Image 1 (tube, one colour):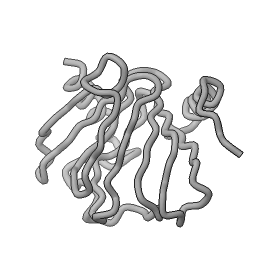
Image 2 (cartoon, helix red, strand yellow; image 1 turned 45 degrees about the vertical axis):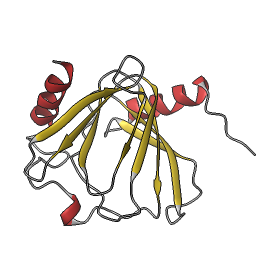
Image 3 (cartoon, one colour; image 1 turned 135 degrees about the vertical axis):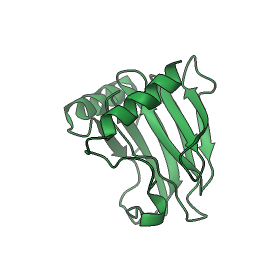
Length: 157
């Protein structure tokens, strides 16, 4: 059976994101975490913070295609210096982006109910210490909200 990616599904996953403490929600299309190909919707609200990270596994390039809203994508060097900040979605620089493994990055919802389709290799594995940015605040820490606000200021400037 096919799954339609329609406005009803986007509305549903956005409502779940709005109700989530993390202010984001995934809707997986892959059947289980160990599956070799991950395809999912990622719905985000503007106050959701994804700490900068990278995927070191050479099979873990990521592709994002924005289906609703506007996503900010920020790329960093190894010290946390911003290399590039761009808007992805209708009216942005592009409607999608392919991020090579090893690239420090984060995504920021610049509009309410932003949804992107994400594709990458499985299986799901938690980040290793080397994949977490040592120069950025962790999620749910005192520094996270000001850091997110500074990223948004950079993206919206």
